[in-house]
Length: 170
Image 1 (spheres, rainbow, N blue to C red):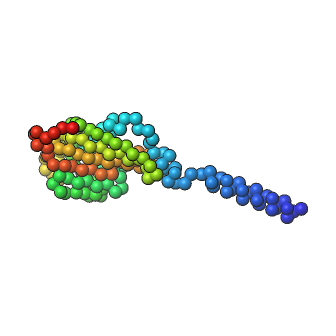
Image 2: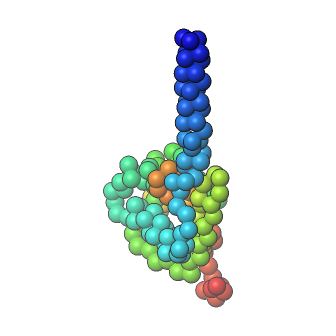
Image 3: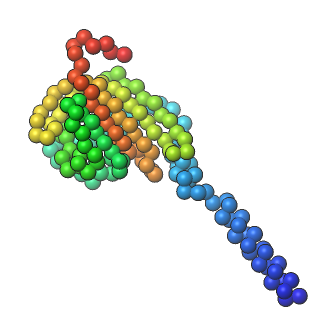
């Protein structure tokens, strides 16, 4: 009788344990479930994130902690002069934005098992200081953002050449 009771109890506990393990999501499933779904207005989200990035760079004193949180661990920037930087290099010498205007923005959101991403292209008129040199330009830009646990993070930023005065505007 004891053996039967012990065997029954053991099978019950084993079955309960297996059922609870099967019902818990794996980390990758959990991350995707937390990612934003059904972004209704990609352009509004894209403009909000671009403004957040540029506003973090405004003024003489950059909030490096906030900037560090905003940049993805594998962030990279490529400038129109060919210079580039990874996250660590950029945080060591971030640009300083004095003023900016965003035009002709286009944004696309995608999601999947790897999480959500947002790609934004636009024209940026900017007055900025990079490595101690002041630049005032209007040029196309591209930014990519990824969903990083609980917020959007900037993955990459590309600056293209300055637009000639008669360049087509789409």
